[in-house]
Image (cartoon, rainbow, N blue to C red; front, side, top):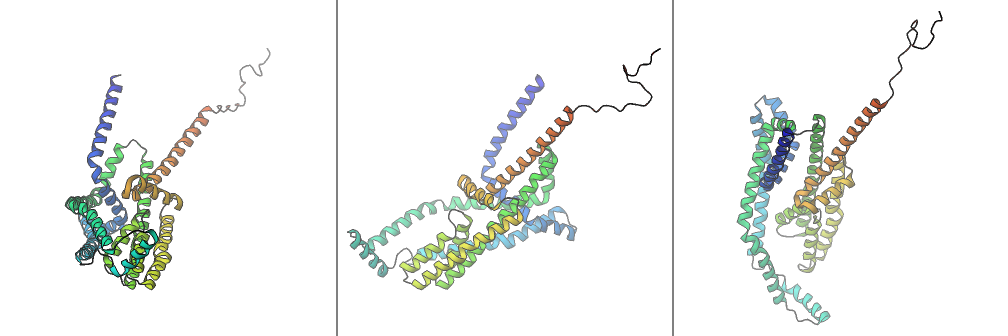
Amino acid sequence: MARLISLGVLVGLVAIFGLLSLRVMAIFLLPLLLAAMLVVIFGPLHRALLRKLQCPEWVAAGLTTLFVLAIVLVPLLLLVVRAGGDAMAMLKAPNGLKLDPAVLEGLVASVNEATGLELTAEGINGELRRLVEDWIGPLAAGASKAIVKLVIGLIVLIVSFFYFLADGPRMFNAVMRLVPLDRRYQWQLLEEFEEVSRAVVSSTLLAAIAQAVLAGFGFYVAGLKGIFLLTLLTFFGALVPFVGAAAIWISASLYLLFFLKSTGAAVGLALWGACVVSTIDNIIKPIVLHGQSKLHPLLALLSVLGGVAALGPIGIFVGPIAVAFLQAALTMLQTELDTISAADRIANSPAPVPAEHPGVARPGVGSVKS
């Protein structure tokens, strides 16, 4: 009885401190998850460096981390800075938040004639500026806090990526010893995580990059300003399933049509966006997901959409991983049930009758009369 009470207390302590630790580490879950996914993607490079250089784990991990910083984070940071410069230049321009009065007056006159209202171009421009300032004001007020959180998240991401590479096997073995699950099932879950992570990250990033590059080319040909800003917005929009790149190129097409009076450019950009930019997403994702993961393309798509709806942007990665783990867990459960069923059949089957030895009479059979 004392042993059971002690076990119950230990389970309670694990549950309490586990929930507390989850609450403490919740703000770092996204950087840690992204770091683990980067390890899956760049793990082959780390192992190749270990083989070729014959160096310690931490040296190869440091070189891999520097490589990722050089080819991923630094270019992305430079692109964000350039896009931010375009946004600030647009806001500081005399007509940056003002619609073209020549075009706006014609629209206002048509609306007034149809509805009986008495709108003016100056009033609409003033209201637009006020709305934009009201929207930008809270963002500017919380910009410092957001920048601090972003910097901390990047530091956690980089440091976690390094230690996952340098001490990943030891960390994983320590966790495996603590988890009361058969070792082959633990490896199966790890394989599922690697496959789904590689598939989701590859498909999402490749589709977003392709859409952003194609959309940026369309913006350049259409003669729009702030191409870097629009391209970056297209990239981030393409990462969100419910928004998509269409939100950017549709807005740009409407701007060309109604405010710059560039009908040809507007129609061309709309056709380019509908036929090429938004279509390439439906080509890249199914091919990559089907080639790198056991998830059915429809199930993968639903897991991404459901993950985003339930968890926000992190659901893009968590949703498919959760569904893949569920699929793997159901497969493991079916294997265990089949094993138990087979063992029960063997245990309940009648014992085989031993073969009769020649020359030995069985009791009660073939007795000899005196």
